[in-house]
Image 1 (cartoon, helix red, strand yellow):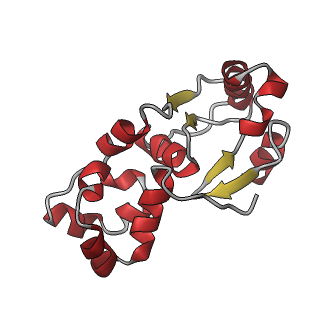
Image 2 (cartoon, rainbow, N blue to C red):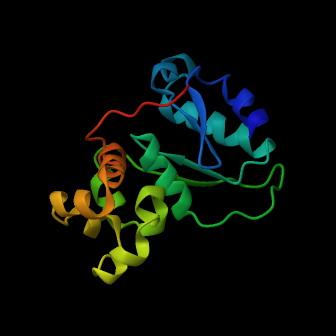
Image 3 (cartoon, rainbow, N blue to C red):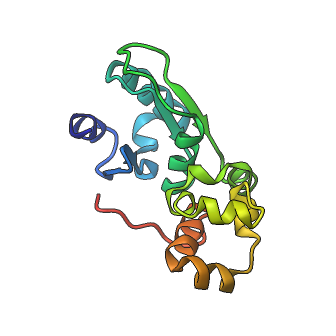
Amino acid sequence: MQALSWWALQFSPRVCELEQAVLLEVQASVRLFGGSRALLNRIRGECAEQGVMGLAVAPTALAALALLHALGPSQEPNHGAEVRTATCSTRRLIPTLDALPLDTLAAVAAHAPTLERLGCQSLGQVRRLPRGGLSRRFGAGLLEALDRAYGLKAETYPW
């Protein structure tokens, strides 16, 4: 992970490790690399050589992490193999996240058994529950994570 984080610094100074993943905030670097598509293609091509098995791009870091988890468990690193990729635009953020299962967002996954008993199977179903009840029953952390994933609250990380 640390070696991958050092490698990622060539694309952005905003790099951190979270939940066994390396997060990059690349918005400020997009023009430097010739646009978002060119930057994504370069990262995808080079990260395969680093043994990366999955790559997710989204408007928020937690949304990208949820998409990465949705790709499923990764196999052993295979240097040079095709990198599985999931992307989500700002326009598609809400419907994409709403469709994801509970286990894709760590703060929600921690409460999955109870949420499933309440009839929830997706992040969207959890999000539609009354916020006051969610906060009382599961704590503010669950709402905080949902708000950050959906872009309703600012994300801060130890870059």
